[in-house]
Image (cartoon, rainbow, N blue to C red; front, side, top):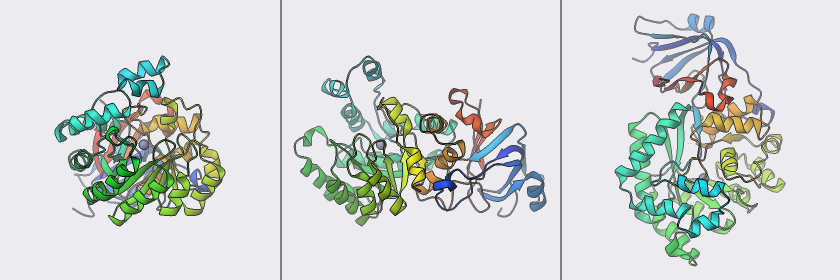
Length: 417
Ligand SMILES: [Zn+2]
């Protein structure tokens, strides 16, 4: 029924449009404000009007079947976009956590059979159904925390079959639950044990066999370009091979050391460079020059106790559009919550609430190349939104879960119990 108003939410204390079909950067990242006594009207999945309640009431006609929600005492923000996760995996590494907190190093845990390679073993052994089942439970948590679009990577299979299986799980889950998933092939996440000392051979396997197998299943190709993982030269050759197979590039850059990732991003035209805890001023200049989104993952820096966070203020000052993501993963990615990440962005990285909200919505949408459709509340866009108790800044109250409801494609897909 195109054109028929199906849903109106009105009398919202604050409605945050975060308007934009391009990334918000520099002063513009935080230069936006809520509409007071705001309202939004939808026809099916599409937003048809946004404004004050009086404006929206004048602009649209409702019928008896129109759902009308009174938003008094509440606020509405665009659905949160989590542009960097490793949410598909099997196994559980929480036993390592207590050891890590008691002082065990990553190397000690890896030597006793833990770490990422224990996830690789469990993921390789899991069936498609088992992987889907474990991942589905994580997506339920993410939806309840306001995420309506989530990127999901392969990268715990590290052989052709298991990488393809992970990507198939992403495709299946994308069809069967409310969160839209963006699939990323990341065979170059780590060198598997059977290729230790033969990194060149593994890179060749990624390029010659995994990338052709992932083509058509993955929208993006990602590489862990960092000290001890993949070099800038290897990263360029993998990301270029991905491009030839139709996958757009994105990159893990400068998490553990300044290791050339931003230069690789500039060279291959990556849409997003992620982590950037150790980024240099040259790296920031590379990202600013090419308009690459900087996706920051402060929860990863926090849970890994890196002792520092990415220089969000320097990036914003340089005009780099900053996005935020959870980095959900079985090691240091303990939180499925974008509101927690926004809180870290504000209280640990010095971002304003307005900057963090743009980072978690429109700039995340740009990082996933979906900004023509999602990331803001504007007529013509898809209605993905989060209804928050009180003012939207309540999202920063990490454990208070002020999320009353979540909407995807014009439908309420989560309500707080
Ligand atoms: Zn990652």
